[in-house]
Length: 225
Image 1 (cartoon, one colour):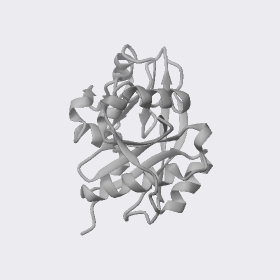
Image 2 (cartoon, rainbow, N blue to C red):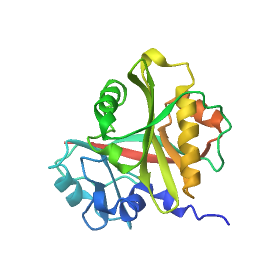
Image 3 (cartoon, one colour):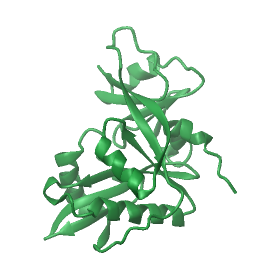
């Protein structure tokens, strides 16, 4: 049976309506993740977003609206548009896993945040890891690669934070972690997706090679006070 994919046309909204209801700040027709979890928000039904943006800006300096262009408060700067690709995969990835992959818990938190700050600081917040499972590979006692789950709905889970320490690239760690995470999501009866900036050509090439296909393009709008 084919699973309807209409929720993927507004994944932030449906994530906050569904699995991540408790991590949402609800301004009516506009919802945001609590700033401790993620810097993303979304809206429906052409809602006037200006009031919600003004309120949310008191909680976090820089954040994003994903989807249509938001209406801004009069005294705010124009939002900066970035174009992302939404990618999806329906089957397990046939790639050998030769490394010991560890599920990251709170005991690994300092290692996780250390690697995040080095490579991927803007989108990862203090509690982002609480949105799903995270996995890592250690070498010589050091966490050198991670991948995890972020936004979730009833039928889909987003793979996020595909990160390898710059000193350990080229070893296939990301491929193994993605393959492991995809298999775990499929075992849960859900479909893996991911989002990537369209300018990140290297990761896009990797994801396609592993079997992901581009489902659509979308806009995300950076809002800065």
